[in-house]
Length: 128
Image 1 (cartoon, rainbow, N blue to C red):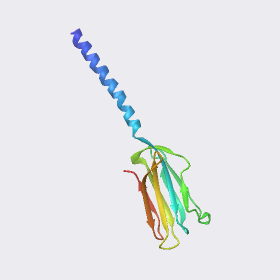
Image 2 (image 1 turned 120 degrees about the horizontal axis):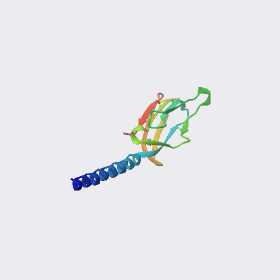
Image 3 (image 1 turned 30 degrees about the vertical axis):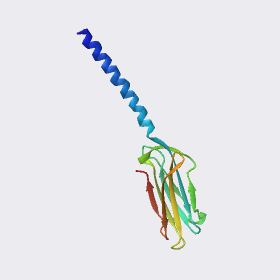
Image 4 (image 1 turned 45 degrees about the vertical axis):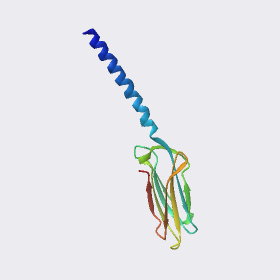
């Protein structure tokens, strides 16, 4: 019976070891995420909302019309799981040729980009 108990203890220890190693894999799915928005001439960004953490935290920036902001870049890089990287931009173009490019960078490399053309330039962009 003592041999079976030792064998059971060894197996149980091995399971705990491998379970502890699997936690490292969870950390590997966390990326350095940053956001960038660029509008052509005459574009006015009015509001930006983006995720800042994996628990639903967001940053909301409301820009007064008189500021006439046409670009934005997140000053901080956020540690997020890929499916938590998300940005919503509200903007107006001066004519049908106005464009707004929204980008998400993962570990410093462009991961996803969306360009919208027209006068209603509001867009949503997220990583799968």
